[in-house]
Image (cartoon, rainbow, N blue to C red):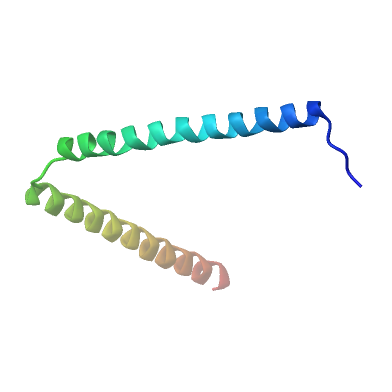
Length: 87
């Protein structure tokens, strides 16, 4: 059987007080958080420049084409070197 002394009761009461204090602090934080999020939404641009997006896509395709050409060139050079060595 478990016997609780007054010290144990005091500790339990302190523990309960601490847990409710942390709960109260978190509720204050959650109240201020939506205000900050709404402020950040107002700062975001509402329009997008389509020319900038087209330029990005063009640059990416250009880079991919260059990489493909280099890959095909290296393949052709390696075939030529192997053919030279074998013959």
